[in-house]
Amino acid sequence: MNLDLPENYEKNSETFNSIRMLADQIEQAWNETEHSSMPQSCTLARQVIVCGMGGSSLAGRFIKYLFRQSLRSPLEICSGYSLPNYAGPGSLVIVCSYSGNTEETLYAAYEARQKNTQIYGITTGGKLKEFLERYNYPSYIFEPKFNPSGQPRFGIGYMIGATLSILSKCEFISFSEEIMYEAIKVVRRSLNDFTIDKDEYTNLAKKTARELYGKAISIIASEHLLGASYIFKNQLNETAKTMSYLYEIPELNHHLMEGLKNPALIKEHVKFFFVESELYNDQVKRRYPITKEVIDKNDIDWIVYKPLTDTKIFQAFEFISFASFVSAYLSLLYGENPIEIPWVDFFKSALEKR
Image (cartoon, rainbow, N blue to C red; front, side, top):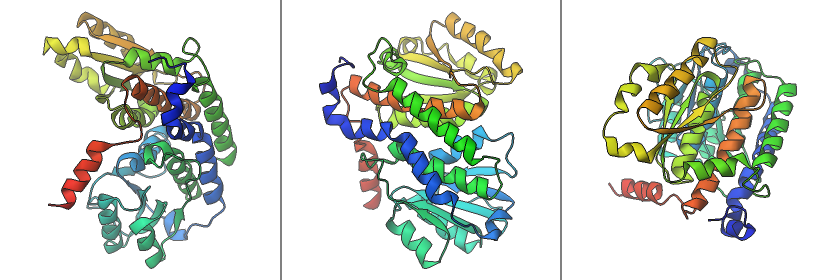
């Protein structure tokens, strides 16, 4: 597959148009929520619980790791049917479902109501919209005009922009409008660097997809880039139909290295993808070259991605721009339709019948 031939993108134009519009999604969501009011009870919450599945949970993970050293209160991701036992009147539960019909998230929403928590909803419609309107909960119900693909993972900008706005308005995070618009500029520049119009010789996203082709991908990241790396993992699974895993340094240094030996036949089919940053803690940074040395000694290939921007927030936004394009280019190399998710659809259909 020649990634520089325009005709190779014709059948997947909706995918690449959605990726190109990531900055527009973030800006739309931020602008539409930033000037809305939040109930005082939400601002007084003692912890935040973000409920969502798949692409609808990615914003919560992105923010949790990006701000974990500065969060005013604990932030937990709930990807399932039930809330933590401690959830109650002192909790702000943000229920996120792009379609509004995600089974697990709807269960969590009703449990949040039973527990008398503070509730905020983010959705395009569906049963979640009905729930929010029936009980008059504050919400952001948006029109995804910058996501022609219709897939939640290609509309992550909406969830990220809205969740950042909500958490900053409630002072769970310190995140100003000025920083938001600078981050949007970073996304626009990054998207331009990785777009289909740039040839493979100068396009890092295309070159990276080529290097990852044919491999199961083990992503290694740390600290503020863990949430963005989780997004990459999900995109590789759904968009490129590729096995991918996420590991954290320093945690992996206490177990994974002993698991590199067997079975030996797997080694030629695995590639490690290091997400590095000069902004990691010094104690963490010194572990990366030693980890690579161990991987080398186990005869496994690896490559590195390092953001060019110089703040943690900008690096995270830069990386998700890059990751979105890499997964889409990889889907083309495999001859896959990046929008279709046949096995997820099969599973949901089978579940409804049982």
